[in-house]
Length: 200
Image (cartoon, rainbow, N blue to C red; front, side, top):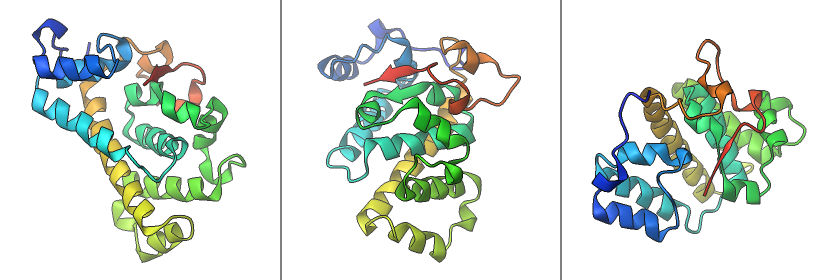
């Protein structure tokens, strides 16, 4: 059981419920379980949706790259619900499960671009030891990204990392594919190709 119960949808704030309904999302579907927990604090839930909605308007980084970064950070956080999800927009942008498997050893992966490898190296440092991020780290990013893209990458890392840790602490695993429910072993998105939940 999740450590925080979902708020039954009939008790949701009407404005929050309307926001979901107008976007065509059914929050009762299992891939949206976190929304049922966030519904306890509707202003926070709306702010979360507003951040992502606004950040993805006119974004410079590809959805494929952002999804690779999100999944790598989810691994570091051991956020099992994050690892089990794939955003449809990223799949539409070329994300495949073969690419996800490349996240196990991204520096050695022939199917990741130098740009993607640089972003993943930054995400690893962000997650493991942010004090190791130096001027050299940013100079390396500038070989592949504009200044605006570097800022965008950093903000998405901050969002994915922080929210991923929160979701991991909520332990929302009971409706995930079985491979993500086994807590006797470290989970990884590349250990379970095909065991995913698509999210719009």
